[in-house]
Image 1 (cartoon, rainbow, N blue to C red):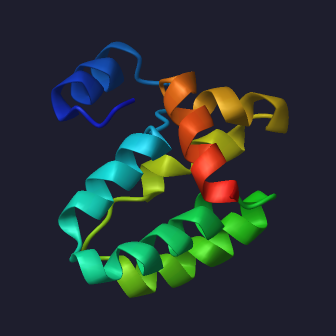
Image 2 (image 1 turned 90 degrees about the vertical axis):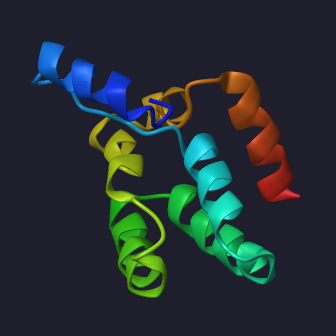
Amino acid sequence: MDGLSGLEKVFKKEFPKAKVQRCQVHVTRNVLAKVPRKLNRAVTNDLKSLFLTSSKEKALKFFSGFKDRWENEIPLDVCLTFFKFSEEEWISLRTTNIIEYTETLRKWTH
């Protein structure tokens, strides 16, 4: 989901057993739009560590540190739902738009 609260609310009502995965690209953009520019690099690096880690265990460790550091700024719990699925599905679950994901992944890995 892109983070539209109304859409998410209706979706949860209509599909109460479904799992919600917030688009990490949209979360990153929303977060960076709200933090002071001088913190952008630090927040971006922390998000990279969290979103691009290789296992749920590592992600939870990064999430704990990130949450302690940025808890008041960012709703991240719904960004890690993809770990409940097989690793082959992660790439398609991380974002609602493959072009956004590809562009962001390219930027993050270079």
